[in-house]
Image: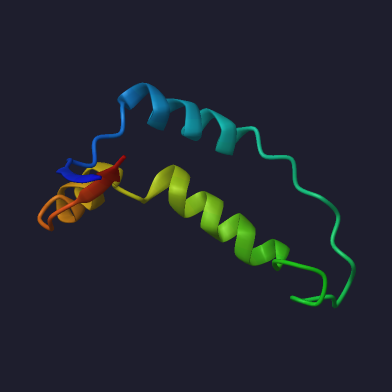
Length: 75
């Protein structure tokens, strides 16, 4: 078994695919007043998807992650 360093490097094609999938989100109806009783709150999920689509700077987070040693184990 050996430990190998690596860099977090997500392809632009993968990020573009994620953006496309988020844009195609189909939102379910929510049981009135359910809040978090039956899973994630719909309003929260919509805010989260909006953040991922329009605000999140993945390249910034990727660079921050790569300031730390990233290691993987192979057998």
